[in-house]
Image 1 (cartoon, rainbow, N blue to C red):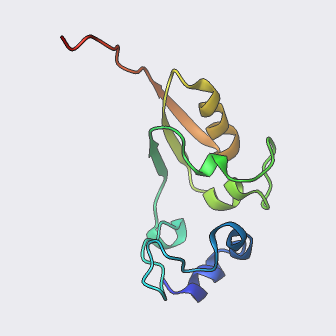
Image 2: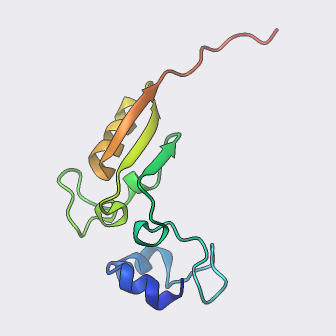
Length: 117
């Protein structure tokens, strides 16, 4: 995707430049185009599936509650469902994922530790 297409699909792209610089950037880009596109309007994904913890989406700048279109998490997730597989022993961060990125969390128990011998 070229930069002009990206900017048309991402009206908040200039706000992102403050932290990440001008597109296409240095990661997943060839100097002129963005190479790794995960936008719901391009890739046609039905949902976002997250495995693990400490996602970047829920730690983007924005209000603590009541996201608006000027808050990064709200702008970045858009309308696509966000399903998050989250460790049950980390409920505080699971709450952030729910609050800031509209995640539906699926909790799992971490396996018990055992001496290796």
